[in-house]
Length: 99
Image 1 (cartoon, rainbow, N blue to C red):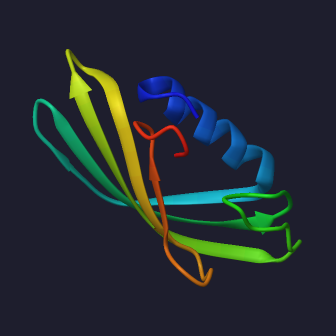
Image 2: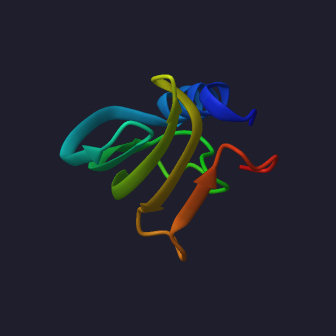
């Protein structure tokens, strides 16, 4: 997706199309003036192709660490590390052309 905030928005929109009955738990958020890290988890049902995985129609649970770089209070870069029981953790970086 696109870089910066637009990449995050595109990522979240895709997420909501592919994970239904979504429940989110925020474990911890820490940050300073230019960086924020959020540790969160979610559960739902995997109903659409998502992060290179075919839909299973089965429940899914994940632990996620999201990292936000900020400039003047606005997101300039979004990265995440996600473990959802796939073969490998998923790494996403909005500053990379391929995510």
